[in-house]
Length: 85
Image (cartoon, rainbow, N blue to C red; front, side, top):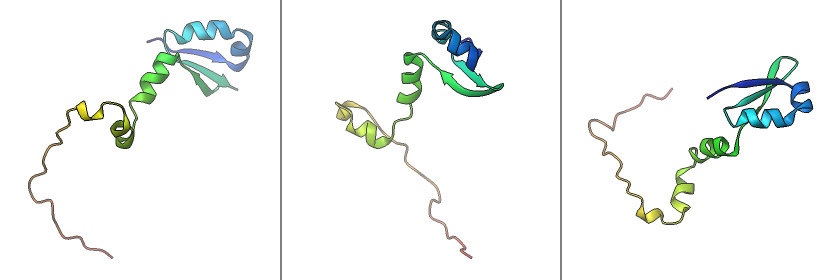
């Protein structure tokens, strides 16, 4: 995965080149030398955002009942007293 950096000026002057670079990896766009934005391909964006679904989102998805889920059982001393101030 290649990481490319464009200044805001470069990005504004040649957005097409930035889009091509985003196919190879993230494109950091800087403002006064500091990263301010990141350009990603839609495939990379979906890969990142689809991994962070909540359990409620996953249970609401179609055919959720077909997903096998067997959480590990807790063992040992799971009940212990706590000193509160």
